[in-house]
Length: 431
Image (tube, rainbow, N blue to C red; front, side, top):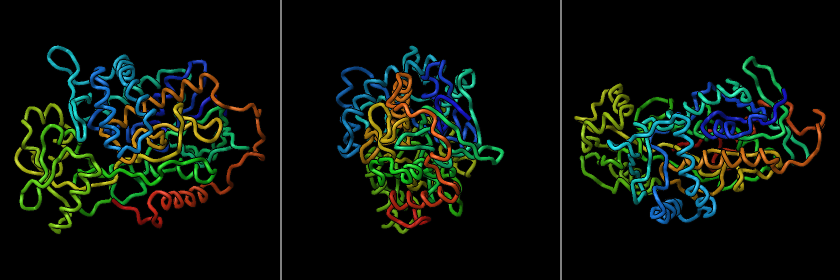
C-alpha cells in the first residue's frame, strides 16, 4: 500500500490535517474503530475563540494559570492568534454554533476562564465539528478513509519514517509506505479503569514512540475531569457532565447537601477538592445540582446531558445527580515543534497524542478542540511545503526497522507506556 500521507486517527485533528493537504497529494486516514468512535465526537463544552484584541491578554493568562505556568508560551500565542481563522474555516464547512437573536455568536464560560469566550452547539460541539469535517473528507477524491485498521508499528530507518505496519479490517498485515506519516491516535483513556474516553484509545502512538526512541514530553501529565456521572459496577466509558454546566451556574454539594467548593476552579484544583470531600464524607461521589439553571436553558444548551441523566433515572430539574472525577485528557505525549514535527523525520503528531506545550500541566477548558485544529493545519502546511524529509529513496522492506510479532511488541510497549505515564504496573492505572 502506497500513499503520499498516512494519517493514523480519524478524529478532528486527523481529518482537519487531511482536508488542508493539497488535493494533488493522496492521503489515507485510518481508524482503529469506526469513523465516528473518536473522542472528538464526545466533546461537549465547546471551542475557545479570541473575541477581540482586548481579550488576548486575559485569554493568554487564563491558559497559563490553568497550566501552572508550565506552558510553551509561543505555542499558546500561535493557538490564540489562529483561533478566529479556525472558526471562520469551520463555519465555511457548515459547522453550526449557537447564536443570539441578532445572529451574532453566543459565548459561554467554563471553569478558570475570566470571560465568556467559548463557542458551542448545544452540548454536542465536538460532534457538530467532527461530523462536518468527516462529511467533507468523504467528498474529497484524494482522501481515502479506512475503518477498523490498526497501527501495529511504524516503519523507519536511520530516524526517518517511511510509513507504518497496519492490521487491516480483514485481519491481514500490510506495510503502508508513505512519504509523510501523521500520528493522530487520540488519548490514553483505555489504560484507565475509569475514563471519559473510548475504551479503544490505549496510547498506541505513545507505545510506538517509546519503542523507536521518539522524544516524549510531559509523559505523566494526565488530566482528571472533576464531574463524570457516577455509575457503580460498570467498566464502560464514563459519561461526562460538561464544564459548561458549572459555567452556567450548577453547584456541587457534599453528602449533607452543603456547597463545599468554588465550582469554577481549574479542573485539577476542583478534582482535588472533590476527592478530599469524598474522603471526608466516606462516599464514592458528590452531588451536582443543575436546578440552579433555568429549565429553558437546560433544554436548549444541555439536551444530551438532560436525556442521559433521565435514562439513568434522574430528572435534573427536580433532583441532584451523582458525579465523580474520571480520567479525561492527556496533556503530555509525543514532543512536537510548532509545525507538529516529531524528533523523527517524516513523522508528525497532532491532537491529544501530541505535546507542543500549549496546555502545560493542566488543560484550560475548551482549548482541546482549538489546539488540535490549529496544529493539525500547521502540520498539513509543513507537509505541503516538503517538510524535513531527507531523500532516502525507497528502503527495502528487509532494511526497515519494524518488529516481527507486532501484536506482542505493541502490548510490551503499551505496558511500558503505562509505567512512563503513571509510574505504576500495567492495570493499576485508575482515576
